[in-house]
View 1 (cartoon, rainbow, N blue to C red):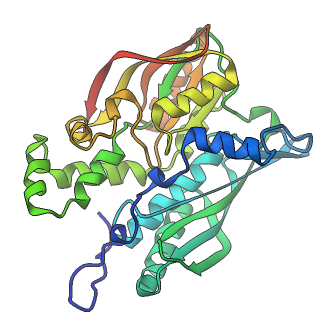
View 2 (tube, one colour; view 1 turned 135 degrees about the horizontal axis):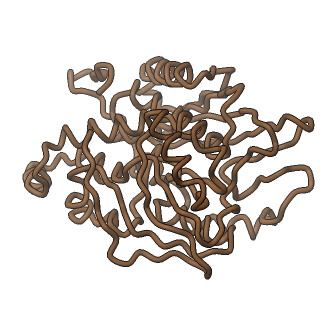
Length: 346
């Protein structure tokens, strides 16, 4: 799945995930706690200096009539043990917040990296993974900041540009819009299974699914290492609202769209990595309820009915995975009433 893992003094592979209790985007502050935090800090209002900002996937400032600067920051704890893969996933995840707005040009990343002293040798492969991922997104590492930290984490402050009139947020959905998702769900249970070390429970986890655990994990890593840039380029002409699916899960991010757009979101179809529903049931992650945390997940797009053929053609032409997962209706909130579960394998 990546470069060879380091070994410690006992020739035992170093496991980055052993150094933290929460992994990937599941380390995010909860949705309701974050809302309360912003309210308490007086940061829940809009700013006249920004096109959009606090509480959105990214902030946008108009520089000229034809140019907007989009900026965001995202970092998290390891969800994989391989440092190179960790770096690639961290870069894809950080850039995704900008891509969710449709900003893909002039992509820069200021790296944010923290490591325990005993893992300092992991810094170079993490940075190499980030650099390679950004190169594949027509982006570049422009600098950054590295500290000693008891919990390892990686990510970056991202900037990108777009025309102000093409930018997307979570607040443009309208009743009747169709909803599309550009990656399958299930990264949390897929990777949670790889962290089980108790021999008795390993057997239980292995027996919980018909698929080999390493195959499920490798597919999850492949999805997390897939940038959302192509999806953003394909959708920004047709979508009315967008967000990316990360720590709040599909249901949580749908609640953001519903609240900001003053609509109700009906989720009817959940594409998931094959083998992950049974693992989620074992671990209690809530995947089939849309509540499982996702790391470097896909874009959730709201598209008017008149544009569905066009966006499907654009996504097909770009080679981007997608599924129709529901629709926006009049009302408020999110509903998941016995959705169809589609297990996807690569």
